[in-house]
Structure formats: structure tokens, C-alpha cells
Amino acid sequence: MRISKLIFVCVCLIGLTQIGWSQNQHLGASKQSHGVAGYLDPRTGTFTTKAQISGATADASEELPPALTTILARLIFNITIQYNDQPTNATTACTVTLSTSDSSGLFYDESATSIATKNGTACTVTLLFSWALASPTTDQISVDYRVESFQAITVGATTTPEVLRSADHTILPLAVPMNGQTITVPTITTAI
Image (cartoon, one colour):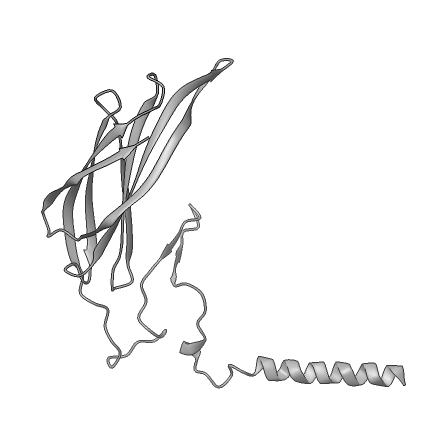
């Protein structure tokens, strides 16, 4: 009697798997595409994504991708380090990262770093960027900045820079500048 129950359970499981496998059979081939569209470079192993039109086979009735406007602009960030409690032989650096996500589905991320001057109390970070955007008049730029203090540490014959302290912050989002525009952002004051 046990073997007959085992055979019955196996037959039921096989029947249920058939139901599960057939769930997507009625959908067209364009609805069954899975994964991320892109290109894998076999030489470098780098995968590059590409924007895709909804559905694998687009016809004239489907929506075309939006027209893109290239914005080439420069943002200048002046960072004043009001309090710097790090050792006098430490080096202070400032990094600013910009990012935006456009209505076209494109994403941009840019960053630049500069070494502090005036005894570690001031940084000027300049970012020149070129972004192709579908909606530059309504897009926003997220801004993150990082201030770090480094010191050279020597162990044996090897000298490596070690982070003594770091501070990460954000500021309110910025509007995307007009093409060719240079904007100096109001001075950011921080401590490290």
C-alpha cells in the first residue's frame, strides 16, 4: 500500500509541474523576454546596458524613445572646512559626486576630488559633465560630498595613505544647468 501511495504522489507532482510549465505558453514571444538588454564584451568582460523599446519587436504603433538634448555644463563647489581637528601633517581631500536619473531611463553619475588648501581649510571641486537628457528642464541633480583626512603610515619599507576621518553629506538637489553654463554653487561649510 505504501508504494501505491508514493506512486500516486509522484504522478500528482508531475501533473502539477506541467501546469506550472504551461503558464506562459499563451503569451507571445515578445512577452517572454527576461533579463537586461545589453552587450557583453568578450574581451574585457564588461556588460553595457542599452535602453530598449517596450517589447522585443517594435512596430510603428509603439512609442518611440524620447529625443535627447546634450547638456555640457560645469558646476564649481567651494567647501570651507570650518573645524579641522586632524593632525597637522594630515592631508584633507574633498570629493563631490553628482547623479541624475532622467525620464528616458538613463542614469548619470560623476565625481571629482581636490586636495584642500589654506592649511586644510578650503577645497574647490570643479565638475565638467556632458549628459544626454530627455527632460533637462525638469531633471534634478543629487549632490553628495565627502571630506576625508589622510595620513601617510609607514610600516617597514611600505608607506600607505590611511584615512583618519571622513564625513559624508548631501545638499539639496540642484536644477540641471543650461547647455554651456558654469555655475558656482553657494559655499558649503563643514567640519572634520
